[in-house]
Image (cartoon, rainbow, N blue to C red; front, side, top):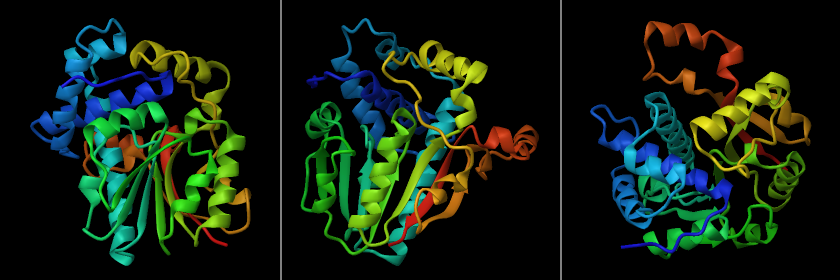
Length: 283
């Protein structure tokens, strides 16, 4: 099976995430153990067999650092955990997977009652529709998260949104506008999302970030980090009712219990280069 694929630079980052999930599932000690990612990767490899892009070549050669595989798998596992905890309270809630990429989150968290929405740009959803058929409870939305009319499709009383590896590629003004609209339109929704340190968007740190994206991860020029915050509670200052519930760093993972990791966990600057925050947007 070959897919019809035509992606921009930001959308192509979804391939690396999927690749890490597949490699984790094939490892001796998987953290996420998403077996579906292996099947999806096999289909993609057939579609990229004649590509000359470095990012695509890496899909064949498994040239991914082990720490990136672990980080990506543990991050997805944590996001799944946030969603499952929310569903324990509200089993018939809506789950909105912002910037869904090509992962299998619906299959991993489905309790048989939820309404699940995969939301991403048309180039990604075009591929996803070829891979995963929609159902009564699983819907794919093909548009930018900043085209707010999609919010009117969400009728559930309780809503949780997840944005894994998304907002750092966006402009702050757009992320702010989205949060204001979610707060206005939905009933006290919760949102779990990845953030980047604003310190790393300036000077030599910015140069290091650009080096990692271009040289190490092989991302295109269009995939650049644009938005960061100084600390987890910064978004509370955007509007009344925006409440920080929790924060999580890759270094906080219980699975990482070596002596070196225990030392790194104590370094707040390292914990918060790229990390996750959990908010509720009250009326």
